[in-house]
Length: 94
Image (tube, rainbow, N blue to C red; front, side, top):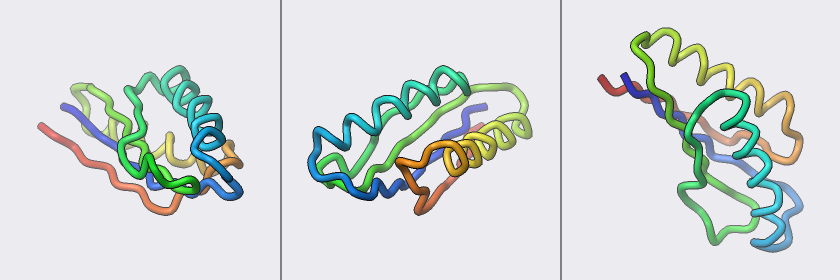
């Protein structure tokens, strides 16, 4: 099974695309390292204060995928003050 998580993030106070990249890159690297997910910025690349980040994970257990991605969202909300989660969407593909 493949699971994807899409996060719509708000990055308050970003004044340029360079600053946005500077805030997102450490987050993407940390998510990859901590949660063993593939992760990338997928949309709103031209907006300074918003980003859409997608994460993907593969496993044979749908419950494990769901719990892992929900844990990832909770981690971002509680441990990453540079980004606020506007919206989230988890999808499972058989």
